[in-house]
Image 1 (cartoon, helix red, strand yellow):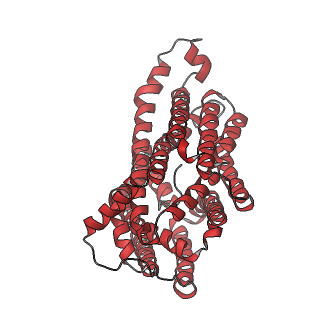
Image 2 (tube, rainbow, N blue to C red; image 1 turned 120 degrees about the vertical axis):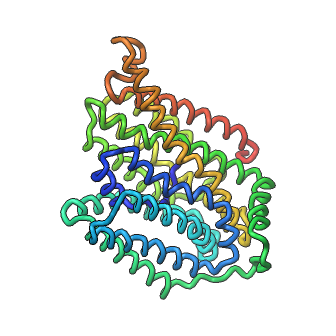
Image 3 (tube, rainbow, N blue to C red; image 1 turned 45 degrees about the vertical axis):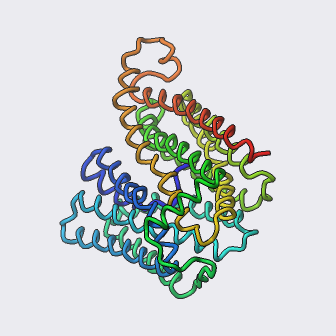
Length: 405
C-alpha cells in the first residue's frame, strides 16, 4: 500500500487549497514529492552505501528544515506563491530519496535480527499514530493561529529529533561494506542485478507496485465519492479516514504482540487479498457511513502484517553492504505507480466513470449498484479496482506459490 514516509506537509496542502481552490493544483503537490523520489531513488542507494549513515540523515533533515524556514520567511514577507511550494516539496522529496535508504540500513545495523518483525510493528504503530494526529493538529493550529505557528511547531519537533539523533544515537558502521569507489552507474547496476537474481524479492516488489497503483486510485476516488454522495460529506470522510487509521494502529499493535508466522510470503498474500477483496467492494456497493467504515477497517487492519513480513524478508535476504542500493532500486520500482495512480484515478473519474453514470437511465443495473448523481462514477471505479486488486493478488499468489510451501 501507500508507503509510510512521504514528505508532504499537511499545512502546505491546506494553504495551497485555500489559495487556489483547485484539487488538481493540490494533487500536483503530491506529484512534486513523488517525482524526484521515484526518478532519483535508483541512484541514491549507491551513494547511501558509500556515505556515513548518520551524517547523511542529519544533512538531509537539515536541508528539509531549511526549506520549511524558507516557507516561513516567504509567509512573513507576504511573498509565498504556489510554485514555491512545488519547488520546496520537490526538494524535500529529493532529500527523502537519499535519507530513506540510509535510514533503512541504519535500522538493520541497530536492530538484532530476532526483533525485526516486532520493530516493524512498532514503526508501523508510530507511523499510523502520526498519520492520525498530524493532520488533526496541523488543521487545528492552522485554523486558530495561522500557518506561521504551524511551521514554528514543525521546526521545534525537527530540532528535538535532530538533536536526539546527533547527540544520543550511535549508528555502527558496516564493517563488511565494500569501500572501493565504484562508478555510480556500476554501483546502481549491481543493485538491479542483485534483484534480477533474487526472484522472491523482485516479485514482492512488483506485487507491491501493482497494489500501490490500486491504492493511489483509491486515494483519489475516496474523497470524490464520499464528499459527493447524499449520505456523505466532509465529516463522514474524516470518520472513514479515521477508521482506516485506527485499524492500521490496532493492526500494528497485533504485529508487535503476535508470534512470527510460519510462512511470511503466504501471510503477505493473504493480508493483501483481505484488503483488496473487502474495502473496495464495500465502498462501491455501500451507501452509508457504517458500511464504508466497516470496509475501511477490513481493508487496513492487516496492512501492518504485510509491511512487517515484507520488512523481515528484505532485511534478511539483502546483504548488508547491498541494502542501500537495493532498497533504492525497490523504491523506484515499487513507488513509480503511485503518481501514475493519482493521475489515472483523476482522469477515470472526471472523464470516464462520472459521465458514464450520468448518462444512465433510472433503474438500470449500474444505478441500482452504484447509485445516481455525482459520486456514483467514483463508486463504480471502486468496483473496478476491487476486481483489479483481487486479480493482482491471485496472480502474484500463483507466481509466489513455490515460496509459500
